[in-house]
Length: 529
Image (cartoon, rainbow, N blue to C red; front, top):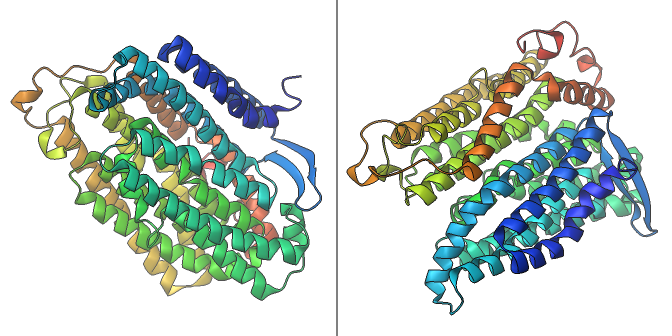
């Protein structure tokens, strides 16, 4: 019975559980709210993983005549995104407990509230976990949606709790920064909606299936595709639309940064896969090279800015901008393996950047500073944190045997394949510059590790101790998973590559029909094993 409505349950149980989490937090305290939220998300994660192992799932429910059906689909494209979103959301619940206790205690001291600190923490924890559940649900709903209006509704739903969590518990000028976040992402969503309306009214339906099959006016399709790309580019924080991201990630509570950066912004890439590559292949063929160049500029800009940061969370934020550039670069590569590599990069970025944001949170709680210039030599004091952070940094830098290597291998293989097949000088140049960007990634990651964990320990950090298990266990799980996925990437690639092959076959042309045959791809038991 549990599997009958698996996707519907996975999306809506967190929504219905959020008022419960609020009441449990207020009544029974932070511990009870933490375990309730963890249990709810764990159950939903198991449903998603079971459905994915089963070969995917599709559920359709009557909705309104105006918008079409309310559908949820878990296919080769959605599965890796959905699994990573809920797995990371579940793990970070445990991490939230000590971090947010620390944060609420700070706020209690600043508020001068008449309540005792424990009462204050309990009251706030209920609200935090209620918002957290709605945030996770909004992200999953966006991934599983089968209808343009449904996609838009979920896309907006994930923005609202994120806005409140930054506004209520952020650092620095949090209210101003949360408004900036709301303004940027909402304007992006409105541009996205204009693209959706143009497609929906032209096709006479908002269902993805109807839009993709409709013989629409190519000019309208191209204009809609550009509007969708701009709207999703804001969510991705791609170059030109990235202004909000370093501020928001710098201000957000660290567990939320660890979801915003690795998981939420990548949903913009999912939207490009689903709405442009799959639904509008004609427009995609015209825009692909622009995505490629846009991705390259974003990679280099984000990497160069990351090298200049002293605040660790801002460094990680610029790194996320750079990593989103890799995703756009892969999408623009216009080949089966390039697209598969881009989706694999989403998975590896979520694992690697999740690890690094969790490390940043441990430094904030245990050391009390975010400034790299005030750190150093902490590997001896925090060995587990250091090992996990090194694994996270190597994942982002694409070093084997982490999962990052597999993503980058496929990404650049696909980009080079297209350059050779098209004989395009521009694509050869972007390929070469893309490799330069990976050197940039390696530089800022190693520089960051050196300044935090190696070198001389400042005297004032002599008494620093390792964090508790609530914080370390989530890091160890993520670190283990990125190594397992690096050694055995087929966990996700078995779904991703055939799916991309089908999409590309359908739209990108016959010359790539054999892209999966006779090449040293990880699928053929080559480099991946």
